[in-house]
Image (cartoon, rainbow, N blue to C red; front, side, top):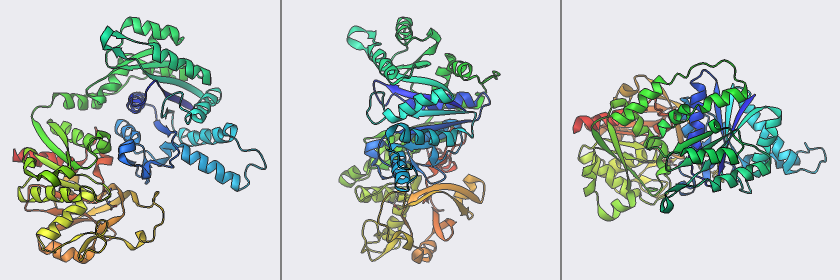
Length: 523
Ligand code: GLN
């Protein structure tokens, strides 16, 4: 078994996720079968109950896991589906250890963090890693955090048991007032790592500016590393370029050597290169507004924003993505929406901003602005149509008005008596059958597979009224409405699933391509 452990130093939010994904891509490009695991040391069981303000978007895997958004980066870079097993949290391992204790499985032993918790962590890593040539294990948080200690200890132990590579991603700030790069915080962080018993095999120095030769030398000396094992990674405008930055400094060769990965095959990165170039060199702009409520945190709509970028690269156009505050639309009206070539109504939960989203939908419907409604967005397209086209006064979703006279979106019976919030939604990949229409044309097939995360559904009692008035139901899963379309509009599509989770640089989501194309045609 071959493992690459990625730890973080000095600060969080250094882009360890992108670094891990990039290493995954580089190793894969040399013919290896690669997986990536994210360890989140928080006590939540999974990201499912977390507010996007806390932790950005919740990424949904095909097998229904509600995971950290880094899993999204991994899938996009590896161009592969991962599983909920790829996101391990402290909550999961603590719960399992206590469960085993209650079952009497520890045979009277005193149950401890070492070895019982660390053994379970290792077991979980091995369950995934056993099926691949190399597995990258990213340990969330920063060295020195109390809660990440058991995971670092497990990583240390695994170094004795499996061939392992330790990569420390640390912050190397550029101090403006003196115009110098400072290595001290990273020196301390490497010392902290050594205290735990881990000597890094390579260091990634993250900072605003490219690493200077002097700083590299200092870092190498204090970390007991050869110069070539200190890799500079300055901020890049286009994160999809990070694999090239690491490749130029031959980080993958270093990993090959230490892990004894054998024969060197050349990297094959042509398709990736082609994509990166399209992102950078596309001409013509198209402005896309994402109407949501978590607009202060761009990470809350991570996959959505990336999906628009993928579609832009595919069409060789530069998308300008802006987040539009639904609550502001309620206060200030929809006048400014005329500046956008296309609108996306994002998914979400809770009442805040609902009427703002509905007003944006009205605007797009009346002014022929291409619009894609996703999950909650699709549900609100239904509400807007019911109120304003079908003239069903006070029509709403039961989520926001349980006593509405016209519950055009309602709770399914199997969602009615749920007494806990974690992992109880309709989750994960399911097959959707498409009838003739724009969506089927864009996907180019009748059966598609897309991921879900919601409790409420289109109410079939209203189906005929919708269809008679022109809003067509063109996608279904076992009687549940999945796709609505209005053919007399340049692009008016609502989907109950989340197409952004499966959009990849090398495999852009067809609905996003369709939306941008409609926007371009209209310009
Ligand atoms: N709140 C809605 C539901 O639960 C939509 C969820 C979403 O947009 N992901 O059905």
